[in-house]
Amino acid sequence: MTQTRLRRTRAVVRRSFWPGLIWSVPLAAFGVVGWLGVQALMHGGETVTIIFDNAYGIKADETDVTLHGVKIGDVQKVALDADGKHVNVEAKIERARKNDLRSGTKFYVFGAQPDLSDPSSLKALVSGPQIVMEPGPGAPTRRFVGNDRRPALAPTHAPTVSYVVRFTGAVGGLKTGADVELRGFHVGTVTSVQLRYDAAMGLLSTPVQIALEPAQLGIAGANLPLNGDWRPSVNGMLERLVRDGLRARLAQDPPLIGSRKVMLDFVKGAPAAALGHEGGALVIPSVESADIDDMTSKADQIITKINELPIRETGDKVRSLVARVDALAASPRIDDSLRHIDRAVAQIDQTLSQVTPQIAPLVAQLRETAGAADEAAAAASRTLNGDPTRQNDLPSALRELSDAARSIRVLADYLDRHPEALIRGKHGDEQ
Image (cartoon, rainbow, N blue to C red):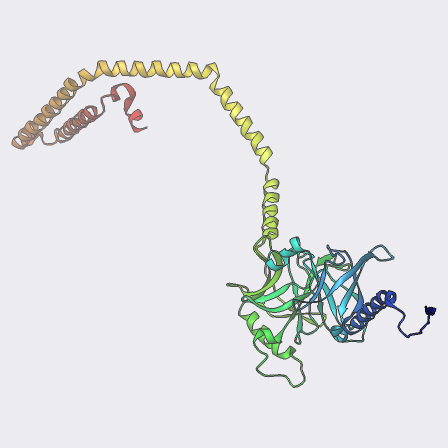
């Protein structure tokens, strides 16, 4: 029987460049991190700091930064400044907008102050505000000062010409950046609203500076200035329009509750006026506004005039007069006088009732007497004509007899019309 020899198993160590499957996990993680780093470098953004006076509802990871309505970044952090008076907002802006981050670029919060005249700003009450960027020129920077409303003049606006308007009423509600309109068209922007005190004159004034855009006034295409100075053209236009009654006034849109703006409009019957001059600036004449503040002011003036009337003194005099009339009406002498008058009237009525039946016979008798006197005078006249010797004695007697007859007839006629004259006399009738 042949015996088989067994071979020993030998372990052989082989070296390889592959560390093993266990290392695939950290290698994969490292690859992902590297890929994300490359993506961040390729598509990452620029971090900027925007300083505001208030947070205005801005929240990290919720508030967007937009340009022309397109999102170009978002807010990363919101914190108080070291002075405790400002808010620093850190935002990440797309790398593609790197060249727009210059000193002339403006940032403002859209929706910080919702305005009824701009319904789109009201959505901030629900969705929150947005930070809007308006690119401008200047040196590159990463630190900006933001505003709570759109800047008065965007850096990309066309050339403007500045004027001053002085309003007689309160203008505190007019904000920088408010519109200037001419017949419903936007033609400019309010650039400054100030309160000044003249110590020499002791007067307060509220000059409002506006910037008009020639391109919006309809004169940009004609007489294009070679030196780029639009002032002569705009001045000439306004001088003519002001002579025709153009005036500036405050308005609200919607009325009474909307934001204020400056309206350039024609006023019928406006007194003659021209562009004024003040410290090298031209002044556009203005008229009173018709908003709620103006009406309230006029109402206060009317109330002040009413308060100046002697209403209390007049009321006291009226009450005193009424008291005297009441005392006089309640006096027993008035009752006695009225009763005396009643008795007198009753007595007169009784006398008239007794005399009236006798008036007719009396009148008839007087008329008969007058007729007899006339007949006697006629007979005497005939006798006188037949006897010449008596002509010297009877004429005056005949005249007297005729006058007596006429008087008796007049008396009869008067008593026939006024029988009460027998009691009251003729004088009472005349009264």
